[in-house]
Length: 179
Length: 247
Image 1 (cartoon, rainbow over the protein chains, first blue to last red):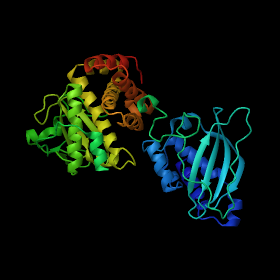
Image 2: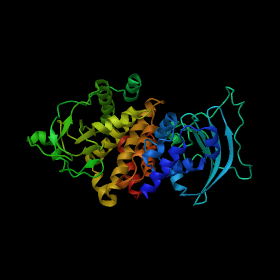
Image 3: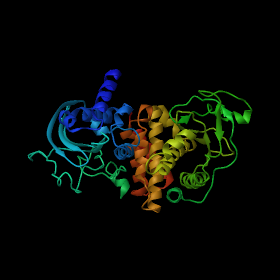
Image 4: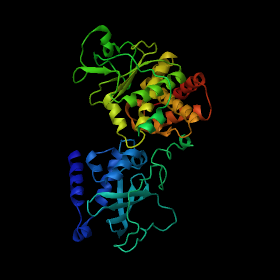
């Protein structure tokens, strides 16, 4: 089992090496996302976190107190399906929107962005889909050569908040302690 | 960072002192406390014995090697002692690669209320956290001091008998939160939530899940911060809280 997971990670890492245009078209971001979600559920293996850019790694470390796993993501159970909802190319690299279904019925929309040069995950965020609302879309940035917004490291919402911003210091988990 | 650390740990009384360099042996530990009467191997400096601990001989140390950290931590421990009504000895020890901190009702360092030992590798691990590593260290100390409270004020036996290690640990987490709540009353920007996230991050096994640990810290915090319980009331409330918990 461990060998299988390690193999998958190596495969994902190999696919994340600096992307060329042709490679990018064949690139399936669902694979690294699945590995990351599994890591967030199982607190490892450590190799999975090497997919994260340093800033993102630090945020995950900070938000999880160094464990690397989020209890609510773990509570969602194994991933049962992943559907690509959109993709957008930014100067730094591609950003994908993927709807992830879990075995216990939970559904989350994940944004995952890659750095084209390093192949690492630069941006990661998830949110619960709004019932009755159309699927979220990736905001269209300026022209690829522009200096406008690009996928930037952002805090991953701490589980239990249903998405959105996070203090990154547990205040969303223990709001009464942050008054 | 050091200035920030001083802010977090600020206080006046120093309890760190004496020398406790020695080789010692691994006692029969259960989580982060050492059952009374089984801690002697840690303290064989007193007996002059040399015994083995895990990978070899281990040392107890009076200092971490970081003078400012030691001073600031001593001040924080002073506040903790006064608030909790306990005066345990405190020292660092070589915890090898298995980071840990320990509390025991056994005496060392001329202190009457047992001893708290903080592993040096554990100290380094917490200091390496991206933010509030210093507060995490104090959180762990407050947890260990919570064990000392349960020894001194005799809640330990009831907790252990009825709920095993889990309730013993919940009580210590509760008192860690109680300390954080009191500090936040004194200083509104005190990073109390770090106490909850720190214990949460060490969830698992007989200590309770991360969620259970965080809940216990939060309950203790609210006992101080919202209910304004004095230490005696907090001990009673903490015991009641823990008796209602099951692992």
